[in-house]
Image 1 (tube, helix red, strand yellow):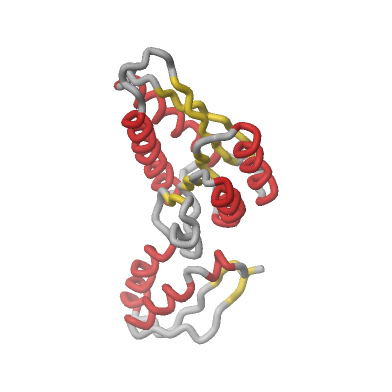
Image 2 (cartoon, helix red, strand yellow):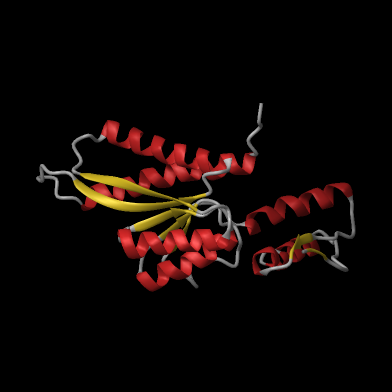
Length: 210
């Protein structure tokens, strides 16, 4: 039996809550006197070859079914336009461009890591289409730099206090961070170093994973 990592469970919980909030916002904007269904196109970009993507899509569908079962009188209906990122940056960017240009979606949900999100966010900024990610955790991705980016989860910097607490509990005085050599891997390092210094631990060198 495959055990789902706690981090992914948290992401999916955030996704369910955020989908409910998105549906509520759309519902408030509708004309309640209208009798015809008003479709609202929303893009979904996930890696459909991986269980994470399949589970993410299931969570989105659950949120939709749950919301409309309680609010069947709402005229607006989110229409999911699903695209497969193929698990890479190019695939995610191509999917985002197709959704924005050809489908003219009102928002895009998804991308499964910060590298994919970065490219799709740039497309969203240019087209003024909100990009909602439940798994882009890098602190380098912010709504200040990208006003059309909405993070539906905590970023990696929220974990540094827990890491420093473990270091302090064991009385360690040195730590060696291992991270991916790109801006998303490096993004959390300054926060981690500050947190370690608060418990009198030092980072004398860093191990870069290529």
